[in-house]
Image 1 (cartoon, one colour):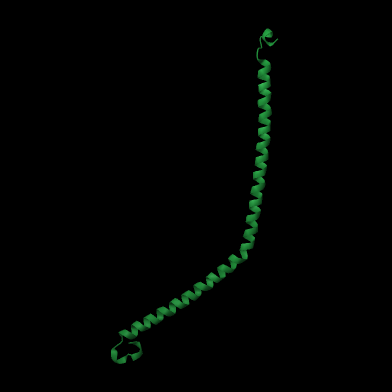
Image 2 (cartoon, rainbow, N blue to C red):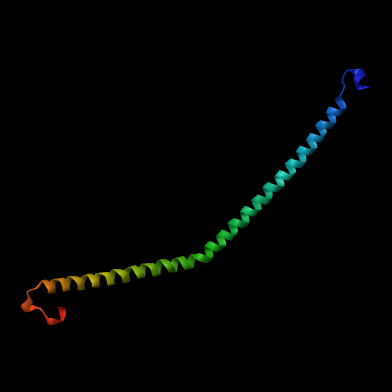
Length: 104
């Protein structure tokens, strides 16, 4: 009948178009579901990161304090060692008759 009206293959083409349209609709639905799943995963990751950050915050604060205290102790020790070395150098360079025998 299609051949008689000059539209041979119309039904096949129409069926193919409908199949493609159905497949596209299914693909779009799957794509939307995938995007929604990915969005949920990102939200979960962000939530876990926020929880870990909140848990680590007091530890980091304490670490900063301890690090600052360690730096002060280091500077005090370093300055004392430097003073001892300077005094020793001064004493060793002082004339022999004025040196104490302990420093030799």
